[in-house]
Length: 318
Image (tube, rainbow, N blue to C red; front, side):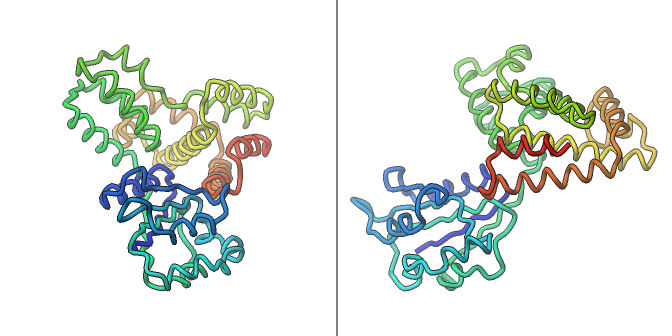
């Protein structure tokens, strides 16, 4: 029985890796079951794994939010699961059992992992970098035989390299739109592909730092009303504060605007505003905000906090 634990901070990559393994095993959707242990008892999911598949040689059981491999408190709750103990003793050649752990790492010696001995394979995924997503975008365009001029591709890079799931959804939209024509102009592309939240996020950050919480909440409310994902806003905030920290580090070396633009591969105009923004906020505060955002991001990804609540608490902290 393949018993696999996939660990990674990027939820989309974790989910995508599980699907890749299932596709390689040639298990169809009818024979695949997905359980979320934040909503369904673990024993119910494991009971399914222990059951012989119906009208198929193999099946897949995917268990999301398997934080009993990463959180000592959750591990203690589930350590006496009789169904889990059976995994080490019963012949389960009929099932691919995949646990998804959305976080940085699993415990050194998880009680449940110890119960199944050496049968578990742990796959650790590194977070996707903008360079990885650029390469992925190029591959998708090449497969679709969709050739874009330099300015068009730059728009894609700028709007699709901050989050893997966003990149996937926006690429699907683009390829569907250009399926017959295989062409697109800049104006249509800019309307089709959702822009990054940089401007709105920077406005929220400024409002927070100036103590204008009500205005910050109003800006966030407008974004959420427009169906902007709260986790996407928090992710954009992390990106913005990291950008501020990086720019401040460059400024310590007395780097010029042109040097900054060349090194970070941004336009001189964008470099100008990056420097201006970096000079507005003390470096110590930037690091403090990054730490808070990382804590909220981790709490969301491990299922410990609702993403909308995390966004509100971050603003209230000012």
